[in-house]
Image (cartoon, rainbow, N blue to C red):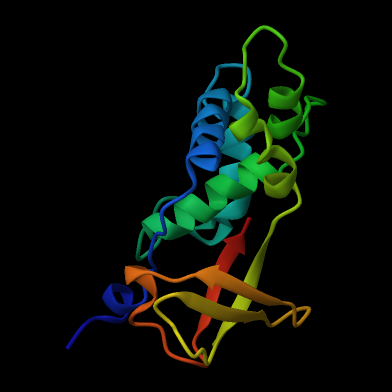
Length: 162
């Protein structure tokens, strides 16, 4: 028998090269000394239940929770010290060349959002996965793969589609 935290830990899907490169740039920017205090504040807000326990939470956050919180910092967090968002800072960089394949992902990442989605029945779950937002009922078709094999219709996922 698997523990609940072993069976509900989540999964990872491969990212297109341009988006992967953009996220790597955002990570470096978010870890810079000028943004570190804002990153710490944003992580404490995104993972509040773990931080409120003062380090005495019964379980640490799942790696997937930390990844979603980090994406929130990149795309949703507005610094409280007047700085631009990370995406705005990256967009305004003129001293470093950012390839067009990465630049193309700036707006889609900025306009993406976290959502609860329900897995819907699909004729070919290995090729295309159909998900419907519980919030606004929008339907998403996502390229399936090894990660989608264990998903069942009706299962609800916390995710971010970019």
